[in-house]
Length: 336
Ligand SMILES: *Cc1c(COP(=O)(O)O)cnc(C)c1O
Image 1 (cartoon, rainbow, N blue to C red):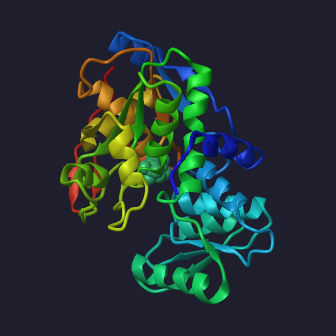
Image 2 (tube, rainbow, N blue to C red; image 1 turned 30 degrees about the horizontal axis):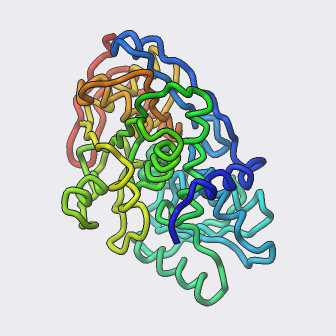
């Protein structure tokens, strides 16, 4: 099975009514002036779950039979929220498996979306064992966070919208982790407009797809604390789809530092008046740090989510230090 543009067009119909479609594409006057070309922001922060992942989860849930016993996954982040929301919208039971180490606030966030939080063991791996058991013994469907065609097609709907909203677009920057978003969006963009330049952006600390593409195959990558926490995690050693899509459809991958992300979050807040999470700010971080060479406009970057820990966010806005695991990222007041 491979991806086709028709799957993405079909996804758009399937997810209408669950995910928000045609989310705003707004100009960023400050970034445009700094870069000397028009820069637009595609705002996925208005999705009901606060992040674009609802598109992929809604499309995956849509293809399940109405009498399915339930859906499960192991994420407490944006994917878990999306699965919880999409399942409830379809009248399906959702059981999100997580370890005892998950903070209470995240558990409550999942429960508030109508899902059952099943707390098992002290690691993500132990939680995964329970999700696998639900699939094998109780007939649940597992919705993967990125490496599944319905998920990739759902995320790809953003690509179709970008071209409709700004046909002249020359460059698109896409936050990149497992590559469901970048793979789907780049596939849609290049199929509709082959001349468009598509750039994946990851953080330096634990850039799994970048390491895999450099090695020519998926490789294990150490996960490290990052302001772009939603971009953490591997691409899966048995990756079936997103590795090949990113290899074939991304023109390049740019890596940004934690201080690049810190400054970009401040910039989106003070200039664009946007509250977004670190993963959303990597596109602006790549632009402002001068890491994108020969930029053609107009360009767009995806503001993928707003689910940021607000105490960390206000520390950043106020220029305070931020703890990243064992290290400290030194704060700096915003300067335009
Ligand atoms: C998951 C996520 C991404 C990256 O998506 P992938 O499909 O894993 O590459 C980017 N931004 C946010 C906010 C996310 O939650």
